[in-house]
Image (cartoon, rainbow over all chains, first blue to last red; front, side):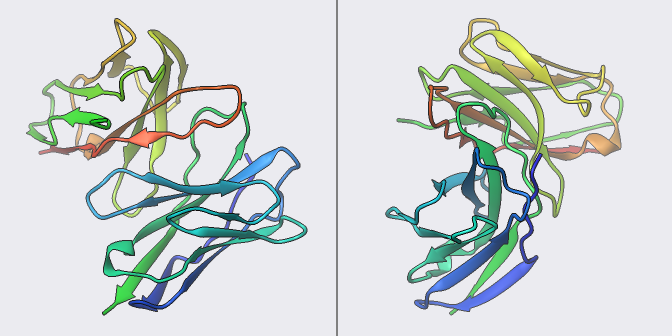
Length: 111
Length: 115
């Protein structure tokens, strides 16, 4: 499976934007970039996914590098409720079933 | 939409005892997954079902573990002769596998502590 690399932890101030990086230098052409997050004492939840173009939804934005070897999850205005572990995952569309999670990035939000 | 539910939420047991967890997926979801998560790690895949068929089992799923989804709806995960190393969060997820995108929806998990 293609692997992703994320920082172990990050800090951000409340109400400021947060940029969570992910490196996936061995990504293949059929890999989609997915992000899930896990709030304390909860199961993971889907955040966003994309292939080549940048994507926006109500939760976040996903910026994908032109060579697709890296991506950034953007939380436009972090709140205390965004404190979680964020997982960057590669999945093959219509093929992959199980999700292979790494350790993710633990995001701390400072009030 | 009630989401994925898991019961019990917490379980404390003594080494050697058997335990059973239940997962109720989102209705009409045809896929159901079980994952295990230990402290500081991401979830690890254990097994999954499409309808009632168990399609894949991880090598993490030893002979002491068995999972069922008898009618293609809820699922149970049983651990026999529990060991202290089984202490973990057991997560269930469900999805509707379509031709394109498959998003997994996770339950809150069952936290197991084996004494």
